Image (cartoon, rainbow, N blue to C red):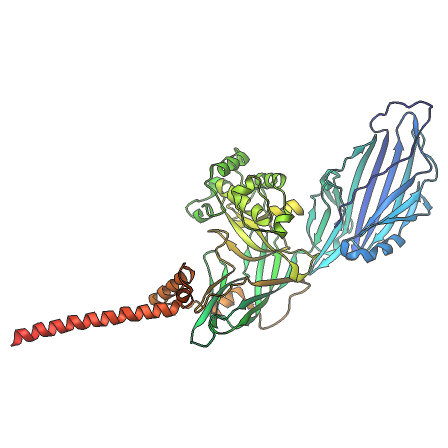
Amino acid sequence: MKLAFFIIAFSIFFLFSFQAKVFAADFNVEIEKIYEINSPNEIFITETRKITNASQNRLISSDNTETFQIIVLSENTDQLTTSFLSAKSFINGRLVQNNKGNAGIDTLELNIPYDGAIGIGQSKQFKIEYTNTGLSKKTGALLDVYAPGFSENYQFESNSTSYNYKTIIRLNKSLGDVGFVVPSPANTTTDGEFIVYEISQESLVGGKIWIQIGKTQYYKFNIKQEVMASDTINKGYSNEYHLVIPRNIDEAETTQKVFYTIFDPLPKQIVEDEDGNLIATFKIPSHENKTILIEGYAQVDKVEVQATPENSGTISDIDSTIFSQYLQPAEFWEVDNPEIISKANELKAEETNIYSIVESNYSHIVDTIDYSDIKRFGINDRQGALKTLQGGAAVCMEYSDLFLTLARAQGIPARAAFGYGYDARIGENQQDAHQWVQVYLPGMNEWLSVDVTWGESGPSLIGGDLNHFYTHIASLDPDSPPSVQRTSYGKQVGLEAPQFEIDAIETMVESAELLTHEELIILYPKIDKNRLELIIDELTLRIQTANIPPVISQNAQYVIYVGVGFIGLAGILFLGMIVNSFKNRHSEKTI
């Protein structure tokens, strides 16, 4: 959505024949914007501007025109004209005519001609009232309401004119529970059937207002894994595909429950790893081209408890022996690097409260790291925490890796979270995979989501929300578990990443065939292999990935079986020789 800012320009005439010295704030503009939200699709907006001439020798000409902007979301541009036609305009309380001004992609100007000059010490009040039908959006079960803020470089005093903004949101309680208000209101009160939020002008610089109404969101997801044949004929072998599939999450401020409807083909097993991730194993005949299809739903709920500095606990509350795996260095998480340690200590200083340290890390990363669209749409290789700290180009995985690494270096258990930060403005097949962080709060005995990337490009997010959909957690390194892993027989063929589609939906489907996270583990239990099978699987994988001639790597299992056969034959021959020697020795003794 376009971030709007408002500049009011006046035609100024001096009252004397000589040019006087210009003093700051010769003209004062007080602006009050009230957004009253009574229904999901309509926002009644009142914008009042009081212009005061505080100069000593100038007047504001009657030739001026006061220009207001009507703004809608980019997908609601068809609502611009409707919103404009509903507008009424006033000067000093008197209804006046307005004119349509310039139009942009998602903006339309409304002009009010001055009805007279504003002399020294005088004021004039302009007001518009209109119903905006283009600033809200239903996203699944949630209602998102937006309002514009100011550009990053907006100044509240310019060219001897000072601007003072007061922004009020009046939200009807009947619309439902409020998930969040961004930016955080300077003041919150109630007025009958309305919750009233006051937003400070400083908090809107470089940002926008975003209100989310609702405490539950539903998602439908679809996973496709393309399988390529590694044999040309049926030799009786199967390739194994191990896929990470969405899981349940139970953390400090949100929960996620998954429900599955389709597995095609059916998995051979579904197991939980040490972090609680679900890994589904499929066996596909090695000569078949096929698509593995998985479909299901997720329900994400916002819980009533919120993490705060008061309930998060301190570093001394953490048992490092229990949480050691969440404090260790790994590739891309250079916890033991001196530069990382120095920055971690600087940000932590003498603070021991975990929530306060998290806030310090969060602010530093948002303030010093810039999001790179060039990296996002170009060569997007993971570079790790250290290079990001040193100024490397960053997208979500760099923000996440740096935050996680700093937290671990400070003694705070942290792990990477993977999934989707759902963006309602784009389609279900265009959602980008996303990475963020979970930190452990000993005071709550819970993990807490922290998404630093959203602090750069959207609302600050310390604590879970309903726009994040989990697939899995990683604690050992960012690539464990991999989204897909394969053990195959025959020739080496490409391994494509799974295709994931996700869409927010208004309600959960009702079906007796929904399978929960817990039911999947019971229905498709782990298949325990004997030691010989595990050794063969490991040898097969090593041969396939070794730098050896393709004729061997592409026939790894055959090589193993032939080798085992030769070893077995050699063993039989050796045993035969031993037996014969005993027979000869025994026969010699009985002669």
